[in-house]
Structure formats: structure tokens, C-alpha cells
Length: 459
Image (cartoon, rainbow, N blue to C red; front, side):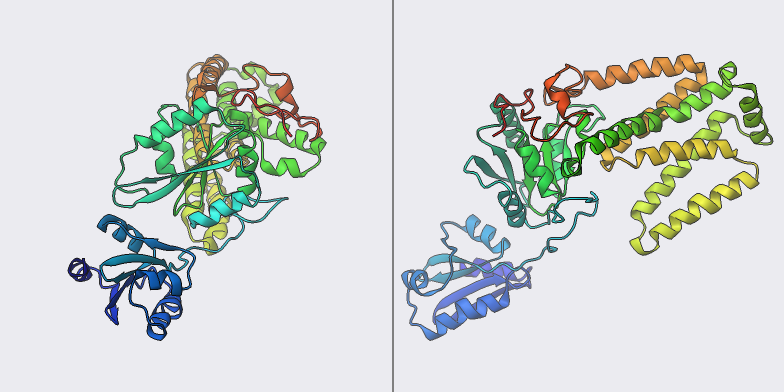
């Protein structure tokens, strides 16, 4: 074994092999805490008379000593930050891993208005601890699996034993067991491997917030925690989960109801507004007052492009600005967005390339989509926005009607792990409306989602 390790060291210069009193100490200096190795391994071996593995278990102060059985386990523990001690052909692993993760901080992608400020990190154990800190119940089950032939990434399936839908749980476990990947870089790898639907609607929530994860676990959902990923996958997911927000439950219920109505209105505005403008100004001018129609015509005077081309140019421009603002370094991101939105927009109007009203229409539509922070859901809005625009450019208001029907068919036919995506609106559940668009007083809506759990009564 020692000869194999010395050969492995030739291609791994950070692997250190030391020999003290016929005892070999092997570790990766890039993965281990050198101070712990010095204080809890090297000093005790030097000071105490350690001759065999029994002495190591009795005299080395560590709560996580593991007797290694084979070569594969040895390498796995080495790569996980353990120090390997070989004495008289006995192999013992001593946990000395160093923290290579960002500390617990506030969520960056999900803005916190009220509520806890802590967020998940890349540290697998910390993420599970943040959930256990909130759910102190023996019914909280954590099932660990290792995925990735090279990355050996740990993932956990977390659920409440007394609440979870066992049929759903078995389906997810079965799909995870079929995953055959070489490398797992992020939790999204796991989600895409187990989600077999081809719908563009997101059927999961990826969140940085432990409070949201704990809340949904108590609803009967299942969480997937992936090592080295600061985002937790929650499933199944429904359409109204993107309308609601965990901060809603930290505020007055009457104010939250108004906020949710605004989110629904924003969703409709972001999808329909560009197409509706094209339909009215191009095909159905009789639906506008004459004074408004004349004003629109004067603003478009001198613009060389048809309305549909003008709208597509503006949509693409706004999406480029949005993507640039996302990717550009934070220090200059905001200033670049202002330059793009104000200077370029004003220059385009002054040059007669774009009409002012088109900038207003596209800006309202784009800003309305900013309410939603789930990237997959925003992409869904983008796609349907373009579809409404194209249908309206061919047949006007009739195109809007046709596209609306197709949109509703697509939305209502979508399944999230065999559950109806639009629940509780379709199928309609009167009891569930207490926490849908309308938010009742918190102690009154005391039932869980009956679609995914039979244990509907909250305690």
C-alpha cells in the first residue's frame, strides 16, 4: 500500500507522506488543516508510546476515527480531507479536513425583506445543519447517496417521514439510483437527471434559503442537498409557488394578498403587453380612441421598421442588457445598465430608429418580469412573450385569443411529478385558497397541500 501511495505522489505533489516511529502519516496538504495534524496526530505520536492501532484509538484525541478496510475507501477518505495513519498494516483515518467554503451569509439571488438572513453555503454539513436547526424532529429523514464516478458527490434526500408522499419518494429515489454521471458540478445536474418531462415550465425550486426549504418540507415536499452546491432543490413545484414568497408569511396577510394580486397582474403584463400593442396598432385600430391613435402614428413617423421588427429589436436589446447586467462585475454592473437603458434608448429615439411608445411598452413588459427571481420561470415568460408577439403580428386580437388558449392548454396540461401543475386553481380546491392568491390569517389555514400528502392536518 505504501509503495502505491508513493507512486501516486509522483502525480500529486500536494500529497504528503511522513514516517514517525514506523508509523506512516499520509494526507493532502490542500485539503487538511495542518495545525490539527500537528496538534492531534504528530505531537501525540511523538510524546506517547504508540505501537499499534489500539493505542491510536485510545490516545489520539478525535471523535471521528475510522478503521479503513480497503484501498478504495482509503482514497475516498483522503480526498475528503482525512489523514491516513498506517501502523503495523492497520489503516486508520483521522478527520482533519479544512473548511474550503464561504461562510454563512445572506442570500444573494433571493432578496430577504423580513425573516432570517442566513443562506446555504457550499458546505454539505452546514446546509443540513441549517435545516436541522429549524426542524428539530425525529421524523426528519436524511438519506445519503454518492453520485458521480469521479467526483464522488454526496447528495441527501430530505423529507418528513410522517408527511411525505411515499409514492413520490419512491419515484425520486428510483430516478436518482439510475443516474450515471462522471461528474456532478451542481444540484441542477441531479434535477435534470431525474426530471423526465420536456415542458419548459420549471417543476422544481432551487433556493438558497433554509427557511423556505424548512417550510416546504413541512408541506410534504422533498429536498435534495448536493455537496458543493449552495442551492437546494425542492420538489414537486406548482405554478403558484412562483407567485408566493416565503417573506409573505412574515408580513400582514391583507398586505400580502394585495402583493400577490400585483404579481399575477405583472405576470400577465409581462407576457401579453408587447403582443397586445402590436395587435391594436396594426390590425385593430378601431379599438383605440382617435386621439390616441393619431398620437401613436405621429410618434412612429420616420421609423423605418414595421412594428413587429421594432418590437423584436427592443426585446432582444433589453434581454442583452439584462444578461450583461447579470454577468458583468458587480462594481460596474449598475452603471452599465443605466448607460444601456438611458443613453442607448434616447439615442435610438433621436435617430428615428425606435418610437418612444415602443420603448415604453417593452420596458413595462420587461420590468414586470423582474418580480420573479427564478431564472427558469423568467425564461418561460420570455418564450411566451415572443409567441404572443408573433401571433398578434399575423392576426391581431384573434392571434392574442388563439395564443391565450394555447398558453392555458400548455399551463394546465403540465405535470409536476404526476401532480397537476396548476393546483389549487385546477383542480379547484376551496380549502387551499386560504393560502393561494388570497392569504388568510396564518393560524386559520391549518391544512397542508392534500395533493401531495395524506397527512393534511398541521400540528
